Image (cartoon, rainbow, N blue to C red; front, side, top):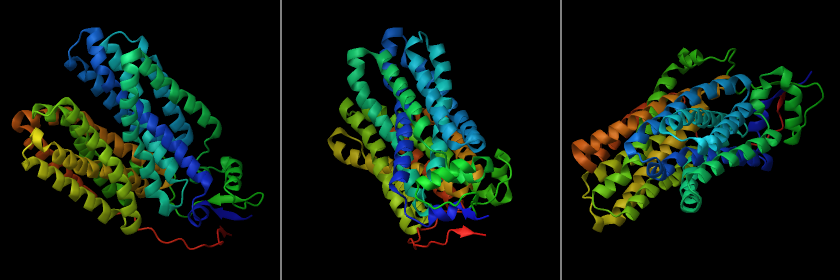
Amino acid sequence: MRVLDVGSLLDAQEWSRYQKLIVAATALTIVLDGFDNQLIGIAVLPLMGEWDLPRAAFAPVLASGMVGMMVGGAIGGFIGDRVGRRKALLASVGSFGALTAFTPIVDDVFALGVLRFFIGLGLGGAMPNSAALVSEYVPARRRPFAVTLTIVCIPIGGTLAGLVGAQILPQLGWRALFLAGGLVPLVLAFALWKTLPESPRYLARHPQQWPELTQLLRRLHYEVPPGASFVDATEKSITRVSPRELLRPEFRRDTLALSASFFFCLLTVYVGVNWVPSMLAGAGFDVGVASNGLAAFNLGGVAGALIGAALIRRVGSRPAMLAMSTGAVAGAAALAVMPLAPQSAFVVLVMLAWTGGWINGVQVTMYALAAHVYPTGIRATGVGTAVALGRMGGVLSPYAGSWALESGGASQLFTLLAATMTVVLVALASVRHHIPRAVPLVVSHASTTM
């Protein structure tokens, strides 16, 4: 019987058009994840008017969604390692789509908070499984770029939510916005259930699914003889799927370092997202500039993430991510000492784009790093656990940002961002198994073992 090494097959060739389509389809689920995640923030203002409630009444709603994402990230990753990335991802997309579509029938803030918690479970579960699925479908040298390209769709989805909300809210109201935000993911989940294949590396670990793997590899234009068996010699063997595996001696240091990195980086991201607009408005900038400041902070992250992925490919993740973290610290420190005045709006926006770009760039590329650190057997669990702990930083962010602004204004806020990104820099430096620089492809047809 011939034994095929699936990892060697995938790594020995460039990624095909079909693999690129799979990455694009997975990325589309994350666009909708980012879209649905931002809907509640967009809808708060009309809900305040209709329900006659102050803004503070919706703080628990926002927090409950973040807690749901934290729990969903951990549970979703574990489920993905047990039943498959494809099933867990599409179940997550279908669940947050269905529950978002039910949002229009909610008529009080308590019920909305409960609903947002369960929506958060689906939103949180989608990300680790999408990262694991994409990372296992492409050659290892393409993994950082593919994962980054997928996760960077979160801010793209958030930007799309703002654009769509600006069109729907004035004409049709918040109920139509949530209905659209729910039905589109449901349609996508149904379509992908029929077309999106499972990870070949995951299938290789389950002999009962080898017939499915055989069909998939043939679709990828690999020659698979009848009755072949499969291994993945490029990955460490994990006999059981359990979060305790993350603390095995070979993974413990990286698990702790990644958890700290996600925690403090997501704390930094959400402090910026939640407080930059109101900070700019308090400094005398008009509403348009304040909104553009948030856009610059977020969209700079798209460019930062893509630059980071390119740097990782050239020099490896350690120098690339440490350089990006240093850039973020420097940008935040510069903003802390800059005079923020309306007449310097252009310079402030440029600095926000620089700082937000590197902060978000580090955050997005950390998914690729986590996907590299853990082998197939616990990859989704490892990514999901790191993200879940990072969400705790997101839950803390409203209080940290409020404290900084009340105690020292904009200068203290940016000093906080510089300090938290310094912790991220140290944590990333502590990771042992960084992504090496990509090795040029050497075409070889030796992809089988006996």
